[in-house]
Image 1: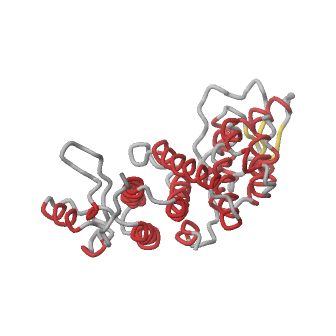
Image 2 (image 1 turned 60 degrees about the horizontal axis):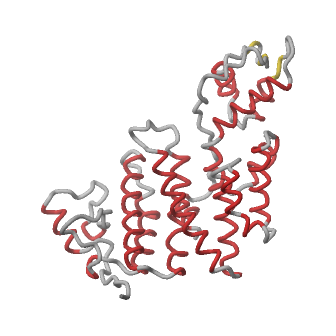
Image 3 (image 1 turned 45 degrees about the vertical axis):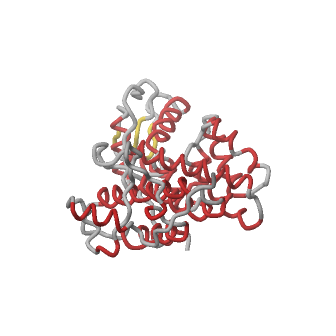
Length: 323
């Protein structure tokens, strides 16, 4: 049996618009009835999701993604977690419509990249949010579902037109999982193509796997901003490893290390954050110098969740849509 083809040419089916108006369940970001967006819906008894008039064809799905990223993402009248929850739900509905219709690989190649970049950006943007406000694990679950699916497709659709996208997505997956051997194994087919960005990501991941953190400082700013977003959420744990390593390697009585130098090494943008980090791990700070002592370092505490500020000198929507 051939897959059903969507016939709904609006971002939200008329049937759903009518139902949600009746139930008073229109989202506060849907002030304009003409710009309502289909909600994600789980399959349930008596609720068929594969009706053609409820499904949006690929062209409408792509337009919906564009609307969510260009128009909704920039809304500042509500807190970002509300914007995130809305977009996340609607993007899940986009993926659901595409899956039910079994859209072509070329359609997936158009649909998935902006969704992946959105989740990468959200991981950074919402990093300091309370877990009850933003679920970082669910966000990265969606990120990985999408990027693994896309990379699998790119393996079969490899050509000059997809090479640039492959470079971005494979390196993004690696940098989102620094030091993860299993991820490096899955990236092997692309590593052989000698792509510079992929090679750089592989080298960084291998160096961290082997306990060498110097390459992180050298290459961090060389990665695209979207890559920096997924690296930044791993920095708190990496900083703990770096400090622990320095305390072991430089351990000696009265060994004081300048806070300003340590700020650079830890990729902090503020000396006060470095001081806070040192205090968190029970390292003494005196006269803008930290005493790097193996005996003093408290390895039992969790990493300190300090957000790394990224200078996003590009339009966020443009970065996510890559337009």
